[in-house]
Length: 211
Ligand SMILES: [Zn+2]
Image (cartoon, rainbow, N blue to C red):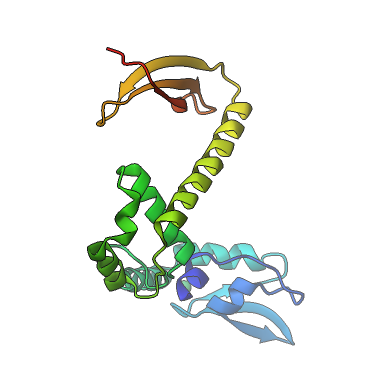
């Protein structure tokens, strides 16, 4: 995590008047036991570090220092090469909870059958990605979906409750691929950034056919 050290130097004054930042980037020069100046570790320039000017003088130098800029650039390059071609950091950690949520999302989003978790091919594919993933049962998947539905419903209620704009309701009729009729209520509202938002708030199957 050297990059953080270099790029985001926090200017925190220590008890002796020198700063956290200056210690990392400057070699202190003492006169009579007092730090009077600092030598830049990047370009060897000697910068005055008199009391009261400790942070501003050194900080201004760091902004201008060309040798330091080159170091930062090199470190950024190094960090970039630590990423895979897909931009996945090597610091990435596998989280089974995240994986399980992604599975639920995929099934709902693509209207996949719940039995997908029992497909031999799918199980093999997941195992090839991560043998540690404990494949859930169809029943657990169903429970996960209902849980996700309840969570989203709660979030939506909070969102609409906090909305300062008026809410417009639109009723529409949909027909699924299985020719089941649905009545859908959509809420339209303006968010705090003046952007139009829309959310489905009711999705009811209708027994009677519609055209
Ligand atoms: Zn310098």
